[in-house]
Amino acid sequence: MKIGRLINEALYVEVIEVVGPLGSPRAIDFLIFTLNWEGEDVYTDDLHRQAARALKRITGMDFGTDASQWLAWWIAQQAEEKTTE
Image (cartoon, rainbow, N blue to C red; front, side, top):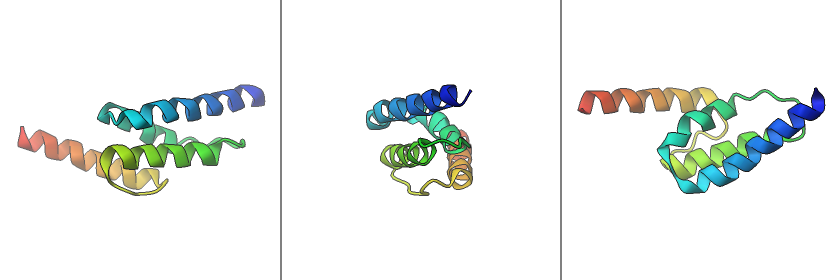
């Protein structure tokens, strides 16, 4: 299934290229999930970089490709929103 995996990763890169510039916070969960992708193919590093760039564009924050930092930040943001409601 190596070809299927390449197609999936290439598709993810294309989706991120479309979703990132939209600047929608609704994409944050998807982008953080993408940072956790552990593919072994040629697109994986590009996939992570594209997701990190999109997250930075949407949030103004910069944790690079560190999924755990992004996730911790996102959880804190959601908790903060709940306390201010």
